[in-house]
Image 1 (cartoon, rainbow, N blue to C red):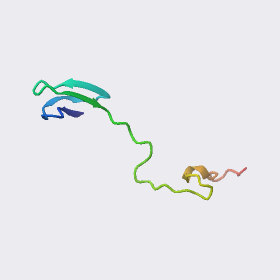
Image 2 (cartoon, rainbow, N blue to C red; image 1 turned 60 degrees about the vertical axis):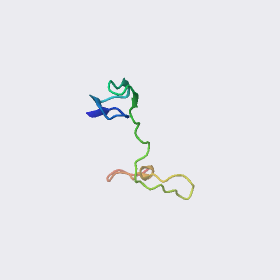
Image 3 (cartoon, rainbow, N blue to C red; image 1 turned 180 degrees about the horizontal axis):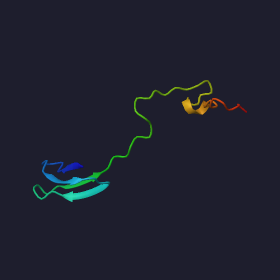
Image 4 (cartoon, one colour; image 1 turned 120 degrees about the vertical axis):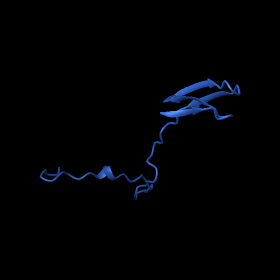
Length: 72
């Protein structure tokens, strides 16, 4: 669980897991609006490579036939 702290004075306002939260700090009176960060769509650190067609290369696009099965 995450600590929820005031962005102005740093007072701990609570702890928990949230998607969207608005809370007023009783110490300084600042209205804190907190929103969960959405995950990135691509994996960080993976290089972007294009093939000859100009399309991005994806390793799973060219899956091989499992051993023991005839290819079509």
